Length: 472
Ligand code: 6PG
Image 1 (cartoon, protein in one colour):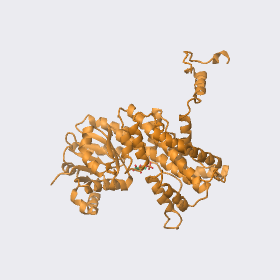
Image 2 (spheres, protein in one colour):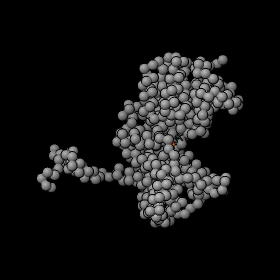
Image 3 (spheres, protein in one colour):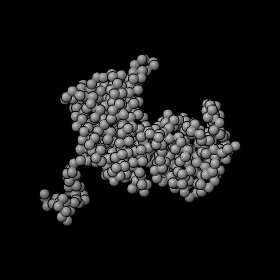
Image 4 (cartoon, protein in one colour):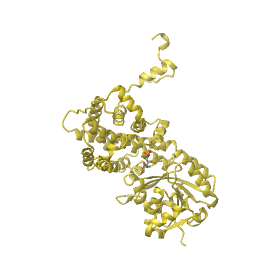
């Protein structure tokens, strides 16, 4: 029998969909699942695609079914199970076989796995896959980290299954070891910020302006035709239009306001902090999810502090245009921060992360896909050494145009008692980033006062301590 081009372990929803996508694009694929009945069930569901799928009941059979050097996608729950799977595979592999972790792994685990396998005959790819179930089935965005020669082996298959933006496949090799999983983590950090900012604008419309879910959905629908056009805005419109089959009420109105999180947002923030890069909009989004989850505490606190009217009052007539521009400005800050974190990580981990390529492969397939990412691609292509996205000519013009709206919206929300942590952090980021003379001179003085930490002077003179001891 003709050997498979690639293998896949783990026939959960994501694994099954990825396997079907691979087969559909004309590639032969071998599949294995720990519970073998699932493999049979999967083949039964695959229809005509089953002709290109080799279902295997043992690891030995599975490995033998793949053409060497064998690329093997592992699509199982992130964490220890991945190491166990690697250990279970190793006795059956041959030189240069490639194990590919396609889960949402912490890139530090990927770096460690890559290093461990580097001491063997085998190698490792950490592969970020974005786009949820639909993306896996019909075209995800794929972020690859590992050896360049391993990438060459998998490039044709991955290119065939990736989403396309104007025929350009949304897949790329981004660097060695953990580069792909790091970029996927930051993708998710930006996703958190994007979602939180949308939720804050929804909060203003719902609580501050008294709009119903359907009306708010229409507003997002209109915005989706303009500068905010993106998958997340598109699904927000759909979500707001959907009714609860039980009660007939808008489904959003019956969903508990406690957000889940699996860790990638938090990892983005941890890594940003480790490198000293402000990612305040992402931080605010992660913190907002955490605060959302303490529902009982919030209910108790509302009893103590009362429930203000939260009436949102904005000067001028074009409230919706201001909200749209405010969301756009804040979105720019979140993306600028995410890209700044990746630029720092590129240096820190010697990856040479290609910023225009990252923006390019996020234009389709992934959760944060949008037209906007094409503009980021162009900005980084034209200005490869820009210190920050917001100082590129195209983005600085967009910020100048939209920032006044963000300022008005945040001011009105804060006055009304409407929580807008991510929007406010984005505004403050712009204000602080563009303030040539800040206030850290006072912090330096305080640090020197209590700890003799020293400071630099604006005149460059070599006097590095204040006159604290002399009773000043
Ligand atoms: C994607 C998503 C995907 C997943 C997140 C959700 O890019 O396809 O980001 O990876 O939906 O893990 O993360 P939370 O459960 O933390 O919101």
